[in-house]
Image (tube, rainbow over all chains, first blue to last red; front, side):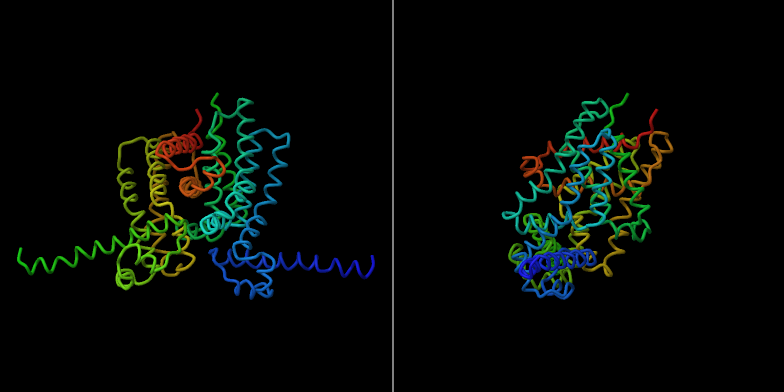
Length: 214
Length: 214
C-alpha cells in the first residue's frame, strides 16, 4: 500500500466514524429525553462534532433521523430474512420473530415514534422509502409464517394485516412503557428477566390465539 | 330569574364554551397534522379565541395538553367502571373492554403519544396524576376481569402487567397506523367495518390466548 493509498482511504474511514458518532449521539439523546426533538447544537455538543458536519452528512434533521431509523431497524430485518429460511416450525419462527421485535424496540424504544414523526413532518419525502424498506418486509415476513402455519394445519386462517398491528403494537408498547411500569406497577426498569417474561407471555398468547383447535 | 342572575351566570356558560372550543381546536390540529406540537398562535387562529385566553384557562401548553388528555380518556374510564359492574361473563367483559379501548384510540389517536410527550416534557408535574387518573384504572379493571375469569375457571393465570402492555399496545398501534395501512397494505382509511374486524380479531386472539384449555 503506497502513502497515496493510505491518504486516499483515510477520509473514508473517518467519515464512517464521524457519521456513526453523530448517530450514536442522537440515539443517546433521544433515549435519555424520551423525545424525538433534539437540536443540532445538542447533537454537536454531545458528539463533539461540528454541527456543520451534520448538514454535510445528512442534509438536514430529517435526513439524520431517517438514517437513525435505518440504523436501528435494518440489521433486525436481515436477521428476520435469515429466520424465514430456517427449518424451524412456523410456531418457533413466530416465537423468534416476536423475540426479535421486542429486542429491537427494547434497544431502540424510539423507533415507532420516530417513524411517525418523519411521516407527519416529511411524509412526501420519506413515506414510500419507510414503507418499502421498513414496514412491508416485516408485514411480508409475518404473512409468510402465517401461511406456512396454515398450510401445515397448525394455524387457523388469520388476516396478516390485523395480525401485524396486534403484534407490532404489543411489542412496541412494552418498550416505551418505562413510565407506566414505574408508576402503575411499581417496576423501575425493564430487566432482562422481565423482557424474557414478556416475550414468553406474548409468544404464548399470540400463538394460542391463532392455533387451530383440535 | 333576575337580570342580575342572568349576568352572573353568563360568564360561566361562555367559559365552558371557550374552554371546550380551545380543546376542540387543539384536538383537530393534532389529528390533522399527526404531531403533538401545536403553537399558541395556531390554536388561536383555529379556535378564533385570543391566545391570551389559553393562558388564562390552562396556564401553559402542558396544562392545555393535560386537559386534552383527560377530555379524551375520562369518559371511557367511566364506561369501563360501569362495565365492571355488569353481569356479563369475563369473556364478554374482555371483548367489550377491548372494543372500548379501540374506539377511544380511534377517536383520539394521539392519546398515547400525548401521554408520553407530557411525561417526557413535564414528568415531575404530571406523572403521578397521569398514573393515578388514567393508567392505573385501566390496569386495575383488566386485573379484575382476569381474576374473575380465573376464579370461574375460564382463564388461565395471566400476569396483568404483561397483559396490559399487550392489549393497550395492540389497540393503540392500529389507531395511528393510518400511514402504514395505506402504504404497506393499500388500505386508505380505517372504516367502521375495518375497525369492527380488528376488534373481533383482537378479542378472539386475546381470549384464545388466555382461555384455559379443556
